[in-house]
Every structure is written in structure tokens, then in C-alpha cells.
Image (cartoon, rainbow, N blue to C red; front, side, top):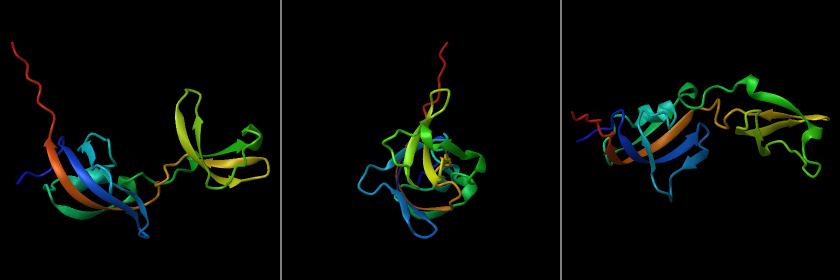
Length: 152
């Protein structure tokens, strides 16, 4: 039977959990996740976890921090003046916001601490520093990209 290999496009149902058993994402009730294995569209541990699976196969994989979203980085914590927030906004710990950098790129941040004159914002991925567990079911292997054929 065909097994998933690098370059294949696959469809996978998944249930992602943290070490304490908390669900952080699931495809339940939705279409399976479709992606090309090895393309960098999913975290490295997910790519390697589906490699070698066969259609209909179910398995559980554990993804260490470094193959998931990496370690939390202190340089992604930033202090932001409270007076730069809109007057009608009351910042609270855990509040999720979107910021933009000087190049016009938007990125999500979470308020980690509210101080007297400032707030501490965290731009780390919400799952940074976490080991992840996924229950997987391979639904389909669509095959890889068609090879380029050059005709004279």
C-alpha cells in the first residue's frame, strides 16, 4: 500500500493537545487539513509524523518544542506605553491584539502584564515553548507535484 513521502499532498484529520490534555486545535467537524509534505506549510514535527503513513492509518505523535513552534524568545517581549492605546481601550492581561511594524506587516501579540504607564506585549507564537501531541488519521494521499517535462 502507498505510504506518504516528501512532496505528496495529503489530507489528514487531527486532534492537537498540550501535555495537560487540553485541546488547542482539531479538524473535527471540518474538512481534513490538506498540505504538501515537506513544503514548510506545517510544523516540522507534523511533516515527519505523517511521513510513512498509509490511507486509513491512525496514530498519535508527540512533537518536541523544537519541532513545533520553538522556545519562547525573550526578545519578542516588548514594553509599550499605555498612552499609545486608544483612550476607550482598557488593556487586560491575556487580551490579544494585532500590531504592525514599520514595514506595514501585521502580527499578533498578547498582553502579558499591565503596568502603571505601560503594558508588556508578547509576540511569541501562543504555542511557543509547548510540546504538542496529535492524534492523526490519514484520509488521502493525492500524490506529489507533476514532474516538469521539457519537450524539444
